Length: 293
Ligand SMILES: NC(=O)c1ccc[n+]([C@@H]2O[C@H](COP(=O)([O-])OP(=O)(O)OC[C@H]3O[C@@H](n4cnc5c(N)ncnc54)[C@H](O)[C@@H]3O)[C@@H](O)[C@H]2O)c1
Image (tube, rainbow, N blue to C red):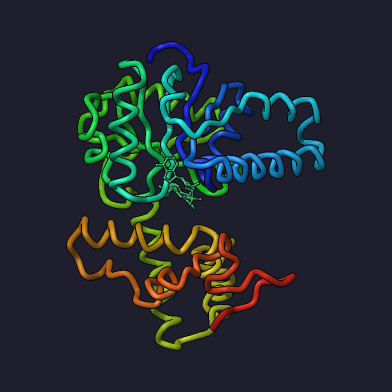
């Protein structure tokens, strides 16, 4: 794909997929968002509506522009409906098998010049590219959460990613108002290789009773000037996503320093996944989050 990108396919309408649809549609690109059920698509569209409405309320967007942005987003439960798009970003659950299956199917249905990008937080770009017949047109496009707010897009080159693929992806990130930063393929890339062990260590500190969740978060906010503490950030990211990333680091480096904390595993087993299930290291059901330990 050499010319400007006019349409984009987004697979997954969750936290990240809906955010990516929002920023691309706001940049004037037609977005086709695919998920497994209408219910998930509806939830994604609601999140987009709410986020754009906040901008209307703050007079950062006119109601007319909001309507036009929403009108640029189409939804489908059939991956084959993405066959005519100019670029694809995959943002489904952090699972190699699920992502590989999607890329095999996309590789067969979209034009051969179309770039396939993944928003994976940690899975090898080279490995996912390997299931397609176009590893040179495969790349990592790692948006941050919440997508409409965060400036960074970490762009990860797999071993075979071409320079042209990199520059088209970089241009797309710039068109969406983001700042692209280039990295090479390694477990967790740079962002999560540095961030996740810190979150995991905070959970170990909690497990060992070193301090309460609030104290751990306060120390990192007030002492290190982090805008959010590591435990509230884990709840925000999703504890299942955090665990999946730790497992990728642990397997990828074969180094015990990346061992996921047992308490993190326990919370995920319990279905306490953070904000999205209203319970993680904090309980979000009341007016104010309260620690669950
Ligand atoms: N949450 C974060 O802070 C964050 C940040 C950066 C990157 N990521 C990455 O983005 C990706 C998505 O994360 P998320 O937080 O949006 O997850 P999420 O659970 O909010 O959304 C995932 C969506 O994918 C859908 N899905 C699953 N299998 C599918 C399939 N076969 N076809 C179509 N849709 C399918 C699910 O129904 C769900 O709606 C993951 O790879 C994650 O690692 C997450």
